[in-house]
Length: 289
Image 1 (cartoon, rainbow, N blue to C red):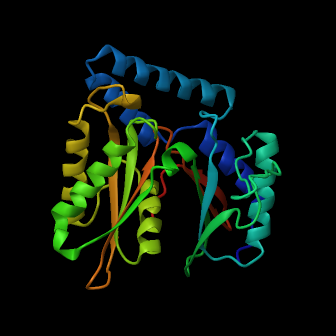
Image 2: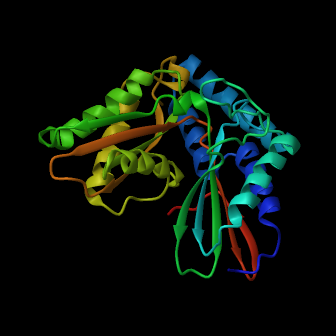
């Protein structure tokens, strides 16, 4: 285990503050580009309000959206089991100090203890490697976009066109509810649970990163063009910018299966990472894995 230069609890508080108050640069650039090519008054007004909100949030150090989401963590590298308790303490502190809206409730009683913790929380995905660092990434996920998650177990005969159609239909059926312009994460293959996991992980990919798989890269481009030609637009009020990007991941699956999952990120697709090594802690918002 790496000797950490500062407590994980403090790092998690810093990560959640960074993710919730500062939009990743690639998402900000995409919003500015969209404002430049939109011609309709309503679409340009909506994008202008979004960008004004982003600037004020960063300047004031306040969350850019009232729904600060549920923090989904990815821990990669070298670590031990003590990291769970430290991340939990960081979430509880961040909820008080930033502050974050307490969103986690019992699914049946709807009771909320105000800590953003509770049974099964926080959500942490572990990726052990032999790297000489510990990397913690957080993806705060709000309900407006998370509730639009879709999973289909397609017939293998549906093929590439069936996959493409499912992705497009899922985003258009969501309409303005996930606060577009959105980022579309897609998982193809694996089992049902792996497929949904990949769709969410895809949202961590910077918009300016290229998919190394040429087939997936072509599908990303085709879906991007189709969705932005739909006319849904910012906040579902019409325009040429329905999505800022489409990111797809895949895994091999059973010969009789073709799972496809869509997980949407709203315009405020927030993420932040901290890479911890013997040299110190390096924070960023563009880590892809």
